[in-house]
Image (cartoon, rainbow, N blue to C red; front, side, top):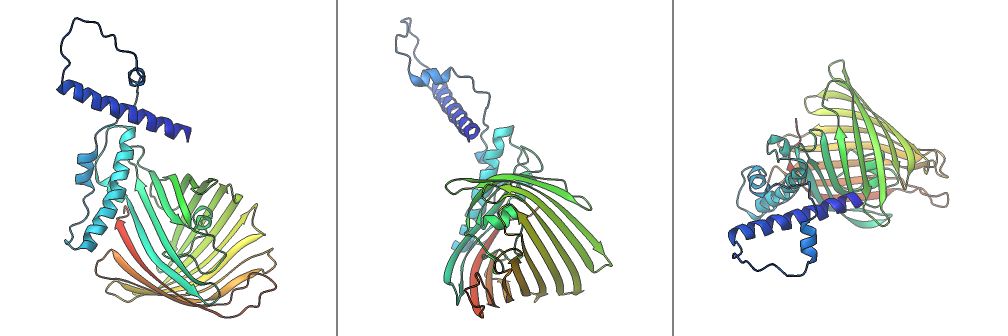
Length: 365
């Protein structure tokens, strides 16, 4: 935090000096033989401090770079373009601190989404949801560095025990409240087999909840229509302490428009009651014309909890683009049998959800 404040201070001073220099060049002071007897002021003292960081003017070039794909003039198109430009320009300006700004297609890897919606179920009632995430690439700092900012479940993001459908909060498991996350990460170059990712950041609540994590991912295709995906995340977070998550995904292509996936995941940390786990079987169906549906059976729990099986059930997720290719409607329906304590009876719990999601940018191929 101190380093960031120092950089911000130096940047502000440098900008002030640049403005002062341009003003002085445009309006040179009149020549006078009379010595300057004005008192020394704080700005004069600041001007004597050496500034090793010389920020470059990136605004004009970045604006041209961050133009979104051609679209219409409707308010929906203008809103989408403004959302993408905001994140893309932030990447370009931040990246300029580390050298001469390099405006090329690597910045187009900036991508993210904004989702507005809500979930309802018989047990907990209605809960609105606002989720945002942006992955901002910084090629000037490093080709593999990126900044992540988002509002989501920190337990999912840090422990890597994520749901495949993250537009809305997860259904199976013990979710925590969404909060704002900010971090910086490094990804190994894409290559056959496995790769490492590393990240550090914090959940921006009070007090701050910092985290550090490293993840190894391995993908192994076999027998033409199958794939095995393994991932292991070792993490430390102030609220979770030290922990480890192992996840296995086994996928099979059943046809041109059908994919089946089995997922098993377990997390052990200093604050969990044994191993926090979940397992699911999902069938994805492509309905063509940018429509798809997912059918999922899931179960979750914690091995040493008083109720080892926290929840199980079925849910159906329908998703399609509406009006624009980057605007999606997601509908959910579910029936689950949750139980949090021994005093609670396990009863059927009907649920429904609706969300609109705007996606922007594009992932690097």
